[in-house]
Amino acid sequence: MRYLTAGESHGPQLTAIIEGLPAQLEITSEQINKELKRRQGGHGRGRRMQIEKDTVAITAGVRHGKSLGSPVCLVVNNDDWKHWTNIMGIEPLGDEIDPEDIKRQIARPRPGHADLVGGMKYGHRDLRNVLERSSARETTVRVAVGAVAKQLLKQLGISVVAHVTKIGGIEANLNLASGKSIEEIREIVEADSVYCLDPIASAKMVEAIDYAKKAGDTIGGVVEVIVTGMPAGVGSYVHYDRKLDGKLAMAMMSINAFKGVEIGLGFEMANLFGSQVHDQISWNKEDGYTRDTNRLGGLEGGMSTGMPIVVRGVMKPIPTLYKPLQSVDIETKEPFKASIERSDSCAVPAASVVAEAVIAWEIAAALLDTFNGDQLNTLKADIERHRAYTKGF
Image (tube, rainbow, N blue to C red):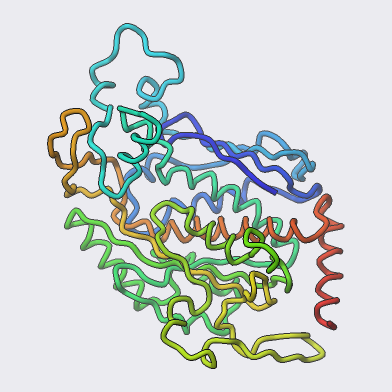
């Protein structure tokens, strides 16, 4: 199972084509739109979210609410396109160029963005050609793709949820997640302004975001994704590119502005003895093999263990600042304050929704690599047989 996306931040639309979904899977635009709305929420978002009202159009691969087994096409229109039709037009420029359009050309790269290096790589003198695609706007359609993956996982008894664990150095109490179901965590998170489980930390995070905004600055944070219901043995130890933890790390790092990933205890393992890190194995007739703890985050040797999968990612502060850092004009080579594009003071809550989507996709793809996925019914039956097998192994 794979997908491709296309589209620019201020282009007419964002498009994704998904290939390899099982036939007979119920897919509704309602569920996708719910996820798109969550991505636009969270305290700290900028004015772009007031312009765009993201909704999906399913234009291929689904008939009467169910997948056909053929490629599925998802389209999200950019409402702001009407203000950019000349600047971002497809056809060649005419003889007369509007001076206002020339003003929108960018020669001053922003520190921390793809602007300068992207211009070097593809030979663009107008750096708008870089920032339009490198923009986090592209994650809109990846959330739509992840929403489809989550509809598949739900049919397989697998749940995925993300929550914010840290913003601006303020850390949530992770013990609050202990003993709660995915549904209980989701209910709390979706009702919170920064998608955090800890109400005390949440209030402090909001204050930190407001402080950064007033200062013309930005702040980052950490998000955690939890997957439950995963059968054991998905992924592989036999080759580097089949390891599930490697795929999950890649997915998390593919999100704009993410600079680090950890699984389970993650970097804390460097401070501990082996006896404090590894999870002891138990067996009982009802559950089969279990781990007494879950310090390794549900993954051993590149494979799922059957325990909850726990992945965290760190998002750097957004580099577009309203008190811009120094940069250099690529035409004059003179120092300037970097260009300012419309941006957020903190997008960590929104990034948690993106993280949930990309992890859901990798989990779904790994399952289809392992089990018979032409039809939903055969996929479900194959996974159930595997669960019974591993339980009594």
